Image (tube, rainbow, N blue to C red):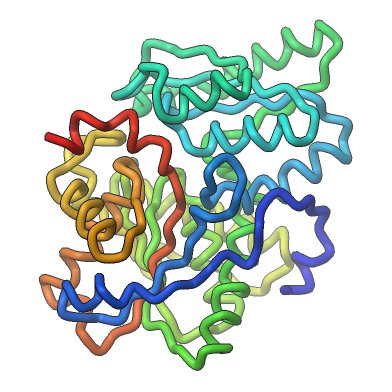
Length: 335
């Protein structure tokens, strides 16, 4: 482990290292390149996902500080909100969610699991775009003030755990992934990931640069425009580099993010996304989700078809989880 990260408080919430599996049949169906899938969907916390890594650092610090209540936000099918609620329950904390109505507010998918967890859920009549670009932090802090007045000790966590500790967790994930690759004598040309709130890719880019690895990170945005995502990633990556005392900094020109595969917006499926979900399931028996990994895989597939990824390349695709949302999107998926 990277020494600066090893010194930080951390609590075990997931099963690590997550598997790194060959997707031989998917690669063959696409005519190459070699594709490996990093199975973050198998972390074990609330049906898995990339946010578990972030929560191991964030919740460890929260427990040290006497926090007993966690507040966060996202869309109604937010994967992070579900994992945060599950982690809170595991650590005897009370979860509060302030969610945007989004495309699917029925009690299905992640919302059904919140019901089982007994999460305190408030759904606002706002789209995720309005919510995440607006004054949601003010709403959550007002809730925190109310809970404090009741004698609780709350912590507000931004959507997607988009903060320095969340980014740090994914610097550590680079180290883990590269050790897995090297143990099998594999050199990866590209690390491919969904870019949502942005801190997962920020951690990947930061880890690659700090460890001086011969690979490039490619992010497919499912929320922000490319320029917005790049600007945000540069800021959080540079803030995290300073926090970890890394002697480096990013410029926008170093970051690769593509926004062409988001269709009509966050949480709205595209035909290419559905095609990607079915192709991966039917070749590898692995399920992607309709909000994040389905769109990122659609981008990867299109890059192959355009020749931007060649049959001689090796790609690691990060499966960031989100499986429960499939059930809320039954109509879109079955057509």
